[in-house]
Image 1 (cartoon, one colour):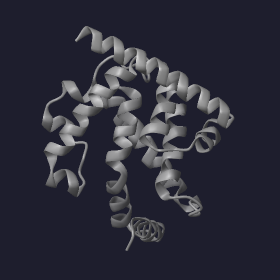
Image 2 (cartoon, rainbow, N blue to C red):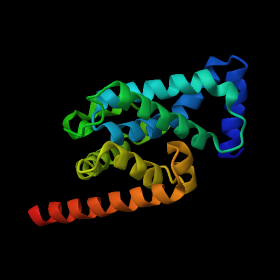
Image 3 (cartoon, rainbow, N blue to C red):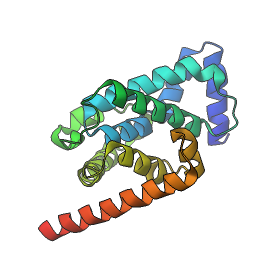
Length: 196
């Protein structure tokens, strides 16, 4: 059974009322959604709040998923919308003032991951989280909107057309914003390298 077939089976079972299928569906994507949230927010507390809102949104709207796109694409559209909503609602949301997981113990960081892959290889997950902390330090030079477009293009592999649709802008505007953010990132990386 392929990855998409497994998603489809879990979605069908969850829609039929299976709590276990819903839990398995969440476990498949919670690490990705948490990393998405952490890269945008810069701290674990806001990342967990955003992740919770995303999965509540997915749960409430699961019956609307038609399968026109991959489930992960649909899920991250909801994540995008929830991130935008949260940034509007909470003025302090999204400042990258700390390195999030970098200041936490290994146990605190890993407790947010419950899927089997983490239990099998917690060191790999910790390495990924530390890598995220380094990324967040560089992303700190960007505005929240710029971090979001980098997240969608680089980490979620969204096309410019998909980003344009999510953000209600043209594909050319999405490209311009992305390349502007990349230039700022390049400057920040050069500056960081000069200081080291």
